[in-house]
Length: 242
Image (cartoon, rainbow, N blue to C red):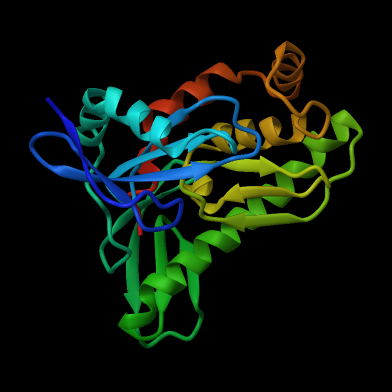
């Protein structure tokens, strides 16, 4: 039977560890003021699991929740695709289309995309950072171009738009109208990006995830169910890049 390896409980970046029998994997606890129940996520960057818990929930209960789902965690971890390093020759998707990374040490153009190739100039030790910065810039450009028309349909002002790399969220909407998105969404098909944008724009009107919220999402894009299912099944794989 799987058991929890005893270690101090900390709601920090330092993980606990969960024994799956064949191996131990990191377990992180993340409090969220909007959470109403325990939610279990796979942490593809750490090859472990994350439990999101309400602010007043006990950490011990969150750990026990993860303990009850060790078989699910083990199955999902085995399904994770291999990691893809950001390096010369890597194959990475941009808006769902595979591209090849080519290091161009003699060029002086930063990074650019051309005919299915992402060229990255400069020294080799800077390639990973430059390629990540390029993805973030592409994500910002795509998000800004798509947010405006969708937000105009709900007649709500949009605050600041930020691009980050959260582990457990693809997007978020603050009460001040600020929107935040994962840069990794620019790797997925455009329909996936449009769905996450519509989801967060709908939160400008409805804070929760009730029937009125989902009804609004369905008016903002043609199909919300397919992208939502894709993220549940394949979204973790986007964190295996870089």
